[in-house]
Image (cartoon, rainbow, N blue to C red):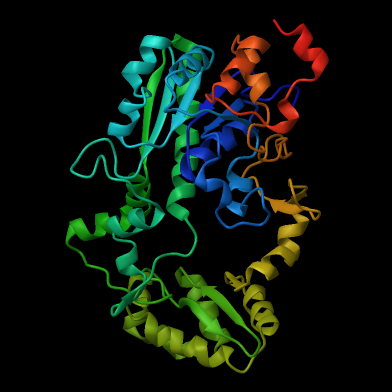
Length: 409
């Protein structure tokens, strides 16, 4: 690509943890200049899942492609800094409840007074209305409030998904909607507020089941790893591990019956269509379980794949890193990280023109702060004064040399 799609777009990222920061990181991967705003001591999300004294694994992933500007938003002079930054930016991203957003002066009406064409992308836990509008929440609350946890695990013990799919799904939806707002601004010159939430993302992913429930056709109950809409679709033990098998559609089911030596199932009315096979999936899983238990994972996968039946090994995180399919596609980009001698794997979920977008490592606290402030019109002398007053902090590498100080204006 001759020029990144979002080159020239400046974004202020007030986000924390996953959804808002990862939304901003994705826009940064497309070429936007992203400035992460955080407290002078660094936000707590820097140290989640620690892998070095400087940062945690989550922070390193979702804060790539950014600079760091630590600001004490409680300081009386912080407003002066944030207002100038907003006037010099195109997009503000935050994940705060409406009450807090207004308290710190980042609600849309306040931002419009500073820059009438600003775009605000605000991500909340529960949405902008309703009794929980000012409650905080995380990925798990979205899973719980959407009905998803109810359907996971077993009736006597529901399970939350181990990965934060609601957070990451919200980040993707937010980036998508922000891109639309940037595109609209390019055509009309108008800004707007983009609203997303963890709960709306979780409800989106549950939507087919909610439609089914509302129609009165059926109410789903937890059934472990089985699929409710087809079968056999489950996780099975082999002699040396576990595999997942997902059979859907009549032709695939017919091929499967030949593999497990059960062609008589084709004449059983319980299994005449996908919905029946899902509702009676325990019977089909029993056949598959019996077939797998005396075979290795490699043997099972080879046989099933030769019959064009979707299946894969159930990998541990370590095995996923070594998996040939992941490596040969270049999904894992091994790059250096601050404070660590060994490279770490970073994943970008898209390519443009067949290539991964260029990216930079997550910033150290205050890395790039001086350049950001100079770009917003602050002189070197003003920056030093803000630092000395405790309004901002700078990384050690951001401190000026003696000569730069003598030339500061």
